[in-house]
Amino acid sequence: MTIEIQPLTPDLWPAFEDLFGKQGACYGCWCTHFRLPPALRRENDRTRNKDFIRARIEAGPPPGLLAFDGSRAVGWMQVGPRADVPEWNNAGRVSAPLEPAHAGDSVVWAISCFFIRTSARGKGLTHRLVEAGIAFARENGARLLEACPMDQSKDSRSIGLYVGSTRVFEKAGFSEVATRKAGRPLMRLELGGAA
Image 1 (cartoon, helix red, strand yellow):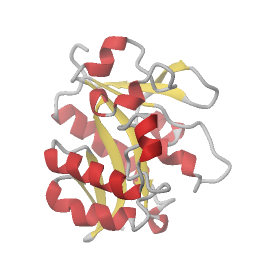
Image 2 (spheres, rainbow, N blue to C red):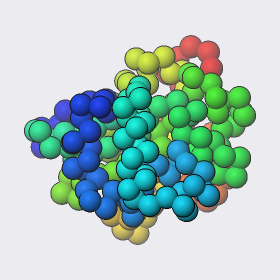
Image 3 (cartoon, rainbow, N blue to C red):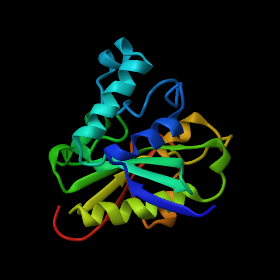
Image 4 (cartoon, rainbow, N blue to C red):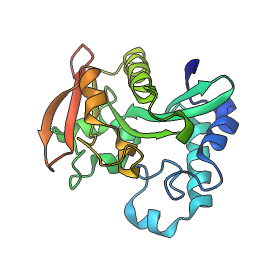
């Protein structure tokens, strides 16, 4: 694969839509799981989720990165300020910030979701997306970048891996800062400056 990674801007919507498919990836989520409160998620269907994420993409700034193999999108990673994924900050979640003020701090960012096309899995694409996400966060003023991946899965195709693998983040230089649930560490990479 010859991979190019780009921020998801409105002009790339057709590629994002193609990647997520008719079902909207992960049972129609359309990468809204950490953006919408549970009650609204239960009310929504895949069409409303799709409309929600499209409006978010159109509003900007880019909510994540798309990986392309030629002209076809093969991977997605949601990355941006913690404030952009409010449910990721929920105090009851393992991904909740260590410092409550970090939930709304524009320099504290999160990598919260991945979606990789089946044909592109097992080829190191997640590693490449994380590296690109680090650069993207740094370029946009982030000082801390956090993730809450899984330690392991019995199946590399597990839907639970939408949060990423701990191994990928360790290789990228992230360190564990908290473990609130076995197998789901909160990890952090300091990008410089004060946070």
